[in-house]
View 1 (cartoon, one colour):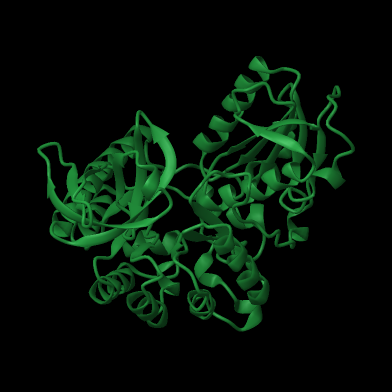
View 2: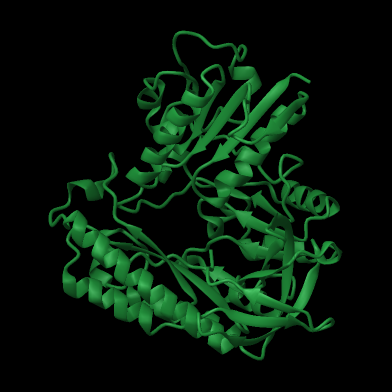
Length: 445
């Protein structure tokens, strides 16, 4: 045994897939993967830079780990490391800052894991970010759901976003390699594969293929599994893709479709590639064709210049759409973005107020979604995690469920009928074959 390593992920599902692959580097060298609160010899942070809070959380966690385990060799990688390496390197106790091109080659870019008096920085310039870096769940995880990275980078230039600077231009995994890796995940007995990327819907341009083409190849692979698409931009949610999801049982009836604003003027200022009416047409088309579709939506409040009326436009727009839940983000000023120069800065307290209003709306949308599911059946994949004798799982349309732990149904797709909603707004249900009651949690995350 070479030692113990702790891995911690901040941010998106793509980061989770990449952390898993980083963990695989350590496993192959006979490291033991432990919890971050244990006294690990090496600690790796895979970071996010979407908001100021994401960066703040990273710094706080770094300092806490270093206080509790000052002898640990601390490596920081991910988007925050790529964009602000010097800022991280100045944190006393950080040993290495690793960029987007380098994070899958830790053992070649670092000489050893012995602490020194300064931080080693290995970060390629933005213009040189071009490696794909295959990433998927591995033995480093204890999940029944696998994250599988098929795409990286982004060619879009949204005025609020730094991700293209941190991850480079859009690029995709070779389709033959993708099929081979997908088969490996199925052979490892993963029952749900979550396709991840910065802009998953952009998959395949360099190969003259589409996401639909890749999905068709995946669904032809034998086995009892299902595929979940992490997120698709509305302008890339084509009729072909919607029809494929509608007609293919192996693809989950769940989509996460970023909106950001329900006001077309704000969308234009954000440099999004659609109007509010365009978005509405996509949502209604998907909802009409895909049975019991669960739809998650990203939305940003407090963007520079957003008036009260424009915020109300967004609220009412979302209220009237057949969606299931919201991920609400408070606008955060990001260096090196166009939006940071815009006039009409919204007061921070007002941003928080708008955030709270949309979170309340999200709960109402979720309640309506639950209500519409009463009497319907859906397959649930229960996971290994056990808390107080309970285990969690997800329906195909992404309702999180809870049941008493039963070893016999772990990592199996079980059909459940939703039977009602309690006074507390929690759905109830029963396994269709055993009539064993289950409880649906209020969160869709």
